[in-house]
Amino acid sequence: MKSLVIVASLFLAVNALDKEFIDNFVTKVKAIGEECIPETSASKDDINNLLSFTVPSSHEGKCLIFCFHKHFHIQNEDGSLDKAGALQALQPLKEHDSDVYDKVVKVFQTCADQAATDSDPCIYSANLVECALKEGKAVPKSESFVKATYLRLVTDGTA
Image (tube, rainbow, N blue to C red; front, side, top):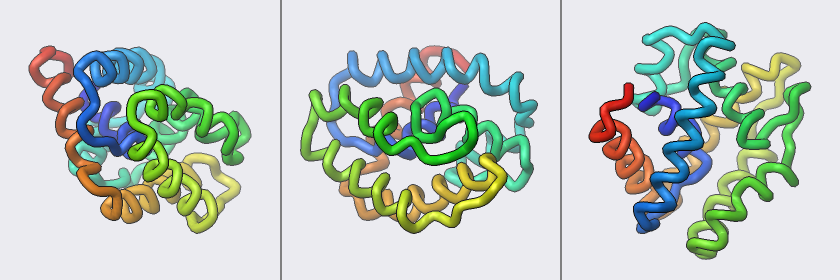
């Protein structure tokens, strides 16, 4: 499950959020991951790629990203972008830290405009993540949330 937090947190690059917020996020990601991994047949290599902030090269790994995007309302079932759903899913972040929310929304909007679309929703998902990785570097302290959630998963003993 560690990789699943990494995938989801690509769109939730935040800084000093409280432990309860991170715990709730980790719990949600674990539940989604329990559905997405078997559904997509993503391999350990796919998961390891995601852990190292690299988009998987396999189609199954890209479909794992798409599965998460559907659950987090980033993409619709048909693969199209769900801008309204994604912004709604980010509301808990806005309630915790509106400054970070604004930065994350900026990354999302940039990638919505710049990521190459594809008729294959899994490929489009991967393109969105590649953009988010690039644009996310511009968000100050964006790695702290990823590290905090990763450490939370490791110390929780869940893999």
